[in-house]
Each structure stands twice: as C-alpha cells, then as structure tokens.
Length: 72
Image 1 (cartoon, one colour):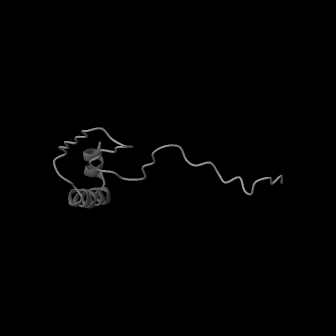
Image 2 (cartoon, one colour; image 1 turned 30 degrees about the horizontal axis):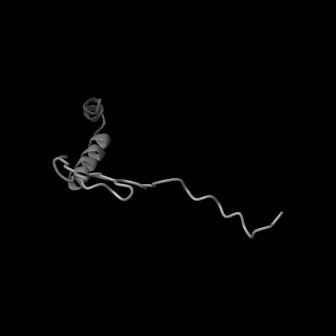
Image 3 (cartoon, rainbow, N blue to C red; image 1 turned 60 degrees about the vertical axis):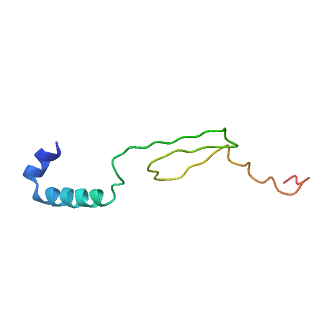
C-alpha cells in the first residue's frame, strides 16, 4: 500500500523517506530483551524494553473530602 502511494505521490515519498530516516535514528537495538526477577519482590515490578507514556500502579487516591464535619 505504501509502495503504491509512493509511486504516485512524490510528496508522500519524500515524507515517508524522512520519517524512515528519523525512525532509524531512534532504533534501540535488535529487540532482544532478557529480564529476570528473583528472590521475590517487595512491590510492583515493571519489565520493559521501550516505554512511551505513563505507568501507574495501584488505584488512584480518592479525592480529598475536605475538613472533617463539613456539610456543604
């Protein structure tokens, strides 16, 4: 599909080529990952190779209810 579009759209070809060069520059290796956890854990364990974005463990804290006895 990309090859067909590139064959008919020179601007797309330029953009795709530029994207490919950027993607090659951020490559982090062959993809082999070997993680080991031993001896038990005292909490959460996260094993990742490439991580993009947030990680959250557990349940978010409840919103603060305000001063005790408040009725409004």
